[in-house]
Structures are given as structure tokens and as C-alpha cells.
Image (cartoon, rainbow, N blue to C red; front, side, top):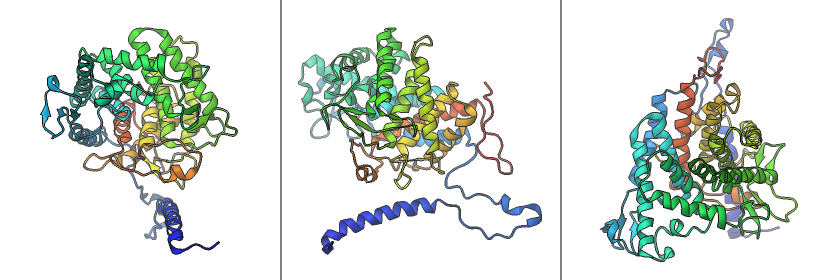
Length: 460
């Protein structure tokens, strides 16, 4: 087949990108050394490895320094306040339908719900109240804005808080509800947060589209489609509402989502989830997208954190978590990071998913849900890799932008990466905080001749 020059250019560019990905993988190999050694004392084995990331045990101060850079960046990029069309400050009592948030990351998005949760955990673990204030100030502010518009009777779609006033999907309600409930339970909430929690949970529990068996689903791109992302966009909020109210129906619904998504979407022989499932499709194309698997494993640890010990299906959730963690550990790269498509090492290394795994695995280690000796090294190496992706300015690099579902690999391979993709900031804070907590229970053994990240029994 013959191509014109114009037709061939995109094809050649794609080939170059693929080749670049392969070269990037090859470039991670250690350099060949010809340094003189004394064979009599086995000198070659004592050469210092050329690790592309920090190795062995980082100090707590080093981990927090990375987190502090992130906090500084998001604090600058998420100012509190409203402005008019001309960019002038508007007091809360004077807002109108034309008012907007000050420019920056969206304070009411699901990504920022995760960021608030990460900041609260970071404040708890490090005792640095700047993190706690960051989350509390913004959660209370957006709840106050929504309450003001609700009092005014403003049409939700004309406001910057439509997703708070009139949720239309799990993305609108799930991660934000979990964060707000955590804030409520921690005593950080002002008066307007609890009514907003009720709006979110009413949507999730009663109005979101479901399959006949109660599985939360979407009506796109096919009429009945499961997105693995929705495990996180529902389960933590439902579970936290169970903890807040004591109503076990919320726990039951959260458990049902994990198990019924897993029944359809978990691939046991790989220990990984497919990204999407559509009713009536046979077979289901199984693309193991990194961040979607991150949503799933985080949802399980969030559920187990509050699920009553006597819940009849707690053991089933634990079993599923262990199977998934085992699958994730098998496909971790040598840099500590994971690939955009987990089982395809020619796809790029992606930061948000890697941070999610670092957090979830460290949390599971800390709670005794998985073997510390086997999995603390996985979490530690993951954090070490993630730490290299936070710039001096606090930007989280190599984060895949928001992503729909697809049934072909090219869609995932070529999704752009950008520091303004909001998905990386919360997971980095969560991961750093939980890894600090893990190291406080006893870090890896000292690295001697040939020793790596080897953890013994927990000191606690």
C-alpha cells in the first residue's frame, strides 16, 4: 500500500512515539561499568548501583519535604474566594449567578475531593496543621457557597457549584462526599457541610442509575456500562456515611459495589481489573488502565477502614484486596512506578496510579491486612519512584489527563500527561502520609552487601 507524504507523517510520528517508549524502557538499565576492581575481594559486586530514584530508606523529613512542595503548590493554585466577570472580589453575601471561583484548580471536583482527604491525612500523620487548615478552609468555603445559592434559589446550572446543588453523576458526588464526611467526623465542619453531605448521599443511594442487581452503572458509552472508576466514586462515600450515621445499609451497599464490580471486572489470572464492562458484550476487551485500578484498590482500603469487624462480608473484601495487591505487585516496574496499561511495559510510566498504589498498599500493611514483609518493600519503592515526579515547584508530573473508556489500546497509550491534570495531587499526599506511618512501625533493614528493601516484622 502506498502513502502520500501527508498520509505517512502521522503514521511515522506514531511509530516514533512507540519507539521512544521502547527506548525509554531500555534507558532504565544500569550503565555498563569498567571501573577497576580487585577480583580477590569480589569488588565487582560492591559497585554502587545507578538507581534512577532514591533507594533504601528515606527519612521522614525527606518524605515530608516532597509533600510540603505539593502543599505549597496547591495552596497557591486554589485560592479561596469568588470574583465577578471582571475578576473583582465578590463577598459571599453578594454572589450572583455570574460569580465564579477565583482561577485555579476546581475546588468542587472529584480530584479535589481526593486532595482534601489527602491533606487531612497528612495533617493527622505529620501534625502539621497547615494541611488540616488547607482542607477545612476549602471544604467549608465551597459548602458555604452552595448553601448561599441554595438559599437564593438560583438555577443550579447557572452557578459554579452545579455539581453540589444538583449532582448528575457519581463524579459529582462520590469523592467529595467522602472528604466532607471525614471532615465532619474530624470536627472540622461548619454548619453547611452536613446538609451538603445529605445532598450527595441522596444522589448516590437513591438516584444514580443502577443495574437490576443494584450495581452502580453509567449509560455511556453503551447503554449499561460499568466504569471501574465508579468503585471509588461511590464506595468511600457510602462507607463513610455508614460510619457517620451508624446505618449499616450504607455499609451493605458499599460492600455490594466492590463485590459485584469485582465479579464482572476482575481478571483473577492477572490479579488486575479491566477498565470497563458493558452489558451484553462478549468478550469484554480487558484494558488494565493504571488509574482505574488505583481507584479500585483505594476504595477497598477505604471501606475496610470503617467496615465493622462483624460484617458478614468483611472477609470477602479482604480476600479481594489481597488478590488485587498481589496482581499489582507483579507488574511494578524497577523504578517503583507502574505503567499506564499495567500489563504493557511499552506504555508510559504514570504517576497518579503509582501514588494510589503506594498509599493503598502502605495502608494495608499498616493495618495488618497484607504481609508487611512481602508488601512494605512494594509501597516503599513506589513512594521512592513517585517522589521523583514532584518538581521543585510542587507540580506532580507525568499524570494522565481525565480519561473515558475505550476498547482499543491506542486510546490509553496516547492519552496526554500534564501537571494540570488534577488527579495526582491528592494521591501523592495520601501516599506520603501513609508511608511515613509505615516507616514509624519500623523501616527496612540496613542495606549491607546485596541487601535491598527488606522489612521485618512490625515493631508495633
